[in-house]
Structure formats: C-alpha cells, structure tokens
Amino acid sequence: AQTVTQSQPEMSVQEAETVTLSCTYDTSESDYYLFWYKQPPSRQMILVIRQEAYKQQNATENRFSVNFQKAAKSFSLKISDSQLGDAAMYFCAYMSSAGGADGLTFGKGTHLIIQP
Amino acid sequence: EAEVAQSPRYKITEKSQAVAFWCDPISGHATLYWYRQILGQGPELLVQFQDESVVDDSQLPKDRFSAERLKGVDSTLKIQPAELGDSAMYLCASSLGREGYEQYFGPGTRLTVT
Image 1 (cartoon, chains in turn red, yellow):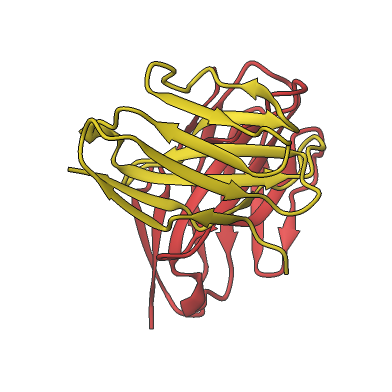
Image 2 (cartoon, rainbow over the protein chains, first blue to last red):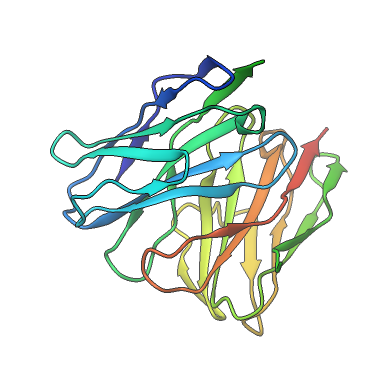
C-alpha cells in the first residue's frame, strides 16, 4: 500500500515571501499521479497542482510550483509571493494509475499560516 | 460553476442510532468517492463508485457502513449503528473518471456522535 508523509504539521510565512511545503511518499509503482490540495477553513478542498510521475518537468500553476524528485520519492510545493488567501491546510495526495481504483491517499496535512 | 452537493452539512446523533449522508456529484461525472476525515488528519477513502458499481470498498467498515449509488448519479452513505469513533467529516468527491483527473470535493458533512 502507498503512504504519504507530510513532516511539517504547521508552517508560517510572511506575506509576499516564499514558502516550501514538504511531502514524501512510498510506492512500488512506476506510474502514478501526485497532487497538492488546499482546504481553507470551513470550505471545500480544491486542487492546487497536479504532477504526472512520467513527466520529468515540474508542474507550475501561477505562484505555485512543485519540486518532483521521483528517485527520492519527494514532492514539495513552493508558494511564491504568499498571500493572505493562501492560509489553509495543504494536503499532499497520491493516486495510483493501475486502472480502476484511483482513490487518493492523503498525507496528514500542513497548516499554513500567513503573517501580514 | 458546477459543484458537488452534500447534505446535511452538520449532523449530531446519539451512539447506536442510524445516520445517512447524501451526495450529488457534478453532472456527467462517472466516478464518485466517499472519504472520511478525522479532525487533524487527511481524508481516507471509504468507497469508490464507477457509475453504479463499486470499484473499491476495501476500507469501508462493512459491519456498520453501507453505500449505494443506485442510478449512477447521486449517492447515499449510511452508518448503522453509529459509534463515538465515527465522529468525523464525511467528504464526497467526483471526477470524470479518466485516469489521473482531478477530483472535485463537496463541502462535507460534519458528524458528531454523542
């Protein structure tokens, strides 16, 4: 079974600064997908960014980018120019590509605090 | 913008009672998921449907939990009897069902068992 580990329960960053959230995972599969989801307080979870394991190029979405190290099984999220609206729980998630069952396996999350 | 709908948003029930949650996925989404999120943890998959068929229910406590998606559209998750340890957020998500595609989450149902 796959596991996802987020070793930072809480991170704090000054507004406009850059912060990196860490995620490692364990799998025996060679093909899979990785995601970062954001869960704001009392609001639904939304997708931040997605990475296909077969792609070497790191995914980027505006101020959000990832550092995907397949050999190290590491998938960190970098948020540039942090904004107050970025404050939320961030979850790293793994999805198998082994056809059919593709429920997400989540880490325990990182609580991101933005200091004004 | 289309969203996943869930009801009720909050539910308080006594242990040993039955409770049910409802989910209406985004129109056209073939795949539907139920997750349980205990406070301070990440969500854990309970069951996955493809249309009306169960794809994965390996983590569903089948002695007390049941789930159905009779017409392949909306879905109901039931707990009978509820236990104190069932207190959690129950999240529904849907996707187009194509490999690697985004799952869209509903607002969840917060269950408190007393």
